[in-house]
Image (cartoon, rainbow, N blue to C red; front, side, top):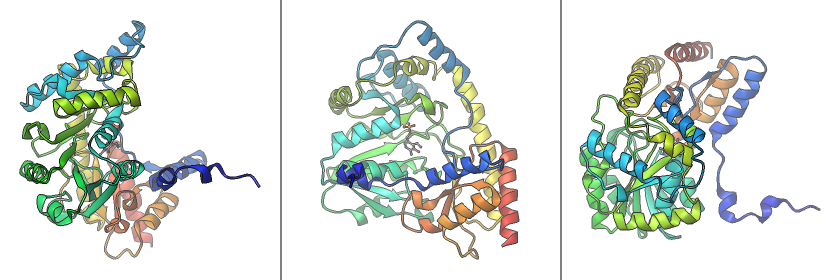
Length: 394
Ligand code: PMP
């Protein structure tokens, strides 16, 4: 009898769960191959192409043969450009030696987790939150403690919630602002209280700012203005800058810790993608920012269109999302379905792809779905029409 290779894999490898949305995406592809039209409201990346100035800088880098490794921390010019961005746009001067360029926010998260935590340590995260926090921590033998959050705290962790959930071995809190899947932002005073709590307890605050720049009606800020002690900020060129496939992000942390993480990066990935780093040098140019600001307004227009339309259909979205490109909605009260059944029936019967709440947590997740407004308004309108007709027909 052949032994399955899977049985030889490590326990932590076998515990990594597949995302439900991946199964839905594969099924959507099958349906589309059969000629069905599918409205995609599940995709967590901007539908816009990378802005022209960034593409041109990338093309120039390739034409000039800039295809070798950079130093593990990233191109010095890019580290300086990121530092300059914090100073100019966020009025928060940060030394470039506190910045490390990484393979996406994903690479930054892995570095920060590995640098701060030992196997057996614990970390507080929100439920619902980005599923990779949970999975990556578990892969490292670290225990995530998922703290249920809801509309009463804008779907974000607060110091009171974190304190109530605190357990022996907690060494860090992870907060995403704006958040995936809720689009909620953490108020600055709440972040500041979380930071104070962490410092009190000898833990670190990790703030994932990957949706920075994509904020509506609230001030776009950075947690870096809280200071430089026990604070790690994760960011990326993926979302606001429209560069998901380039795989480029960064982190900012205390200078001495960043030095250690640079050594770790050298061992883990040598360096981030070189042509992408050269391309990103154009990301902060005024011509690029002008394009990105137009897109931000377009995302806001989409949110303003989709939010009332979904509420009209009976979905409950009690807190107005102020960032990212997601709406996290509770299924209509009368609908006696869980979100897994709802999303698969939506796909099969209505031709609308959504992400079930189960991908993001356990607390009440089975009654929630995530809508991404990463499609043009006409397509979002069509999605709403299909959902309305389906609800009317059952
Ligand atoms: N954090 C959050 C909250 C995300 O939603 C994502 C991507 N969906 C990431 C981190 C990772 O992004 P990337 O590696 O593309 O920068």
